[in-house]
Image 1 (cartoon, rainbow, N blue to C red):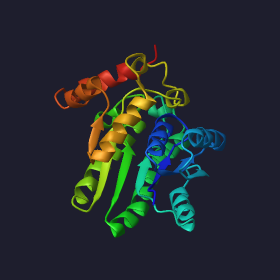
Image 2 (image 1 turned 90 degrees about the horizontal axis):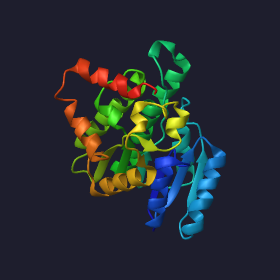
Image 3 (image 1 turned 60 degrees about the vertical axis):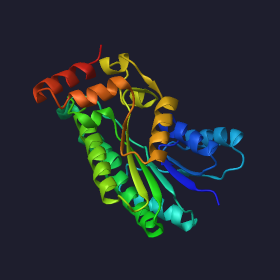
Length: 259
């Protein structure tokens, strides 16, 4: 029997790249995205090259309260067993915190943290009952430092990293692994939607979605707890531990300013 992976934010970018990799290896897919049109296109694209797998597409806005429970029920009602959970969906809000609408901040926090934790908890209960499963959570290089103009996003990704590390240790020896994937600037629509594509950070070395997905996929299958994409990003993630905090935030502000 084929195993099944559920991927949020699966209609584009890293989520779609991961979906293609799982499909290539024979996994059935549950693809979740807010954009129903893009989701249909993504499903058709995967089916054109992976005809033997089953794909379930679920259009859903996971930034809404109760959406995690609704998604879990939709999957359970179809008697779909989720062997791998990929919490990839996320949104960005750019600008000075006091100038950003609080409703946008609240939506970011709910999707990036609340929904991720709820989905993890719901599907983890089934995994622990079976004694097997894998979870991949999309963190970021932003997880390692506070960053002006991007303060809430970075804080939410730090939450994802620490949450993932904590439960990974709790689950040691259970047959279930948790991996936090920490990419840097990546060539997706995410930067455009988040209004950050003109920042200094996105004018440097940018990874492709395929590159990030391949690294995350490999780390997930090996059961690694944290993987940072790219040598430069690894150096940055390590170096912030060694420099004064004020210097770290100053650098972060410099990188997130538009040019």
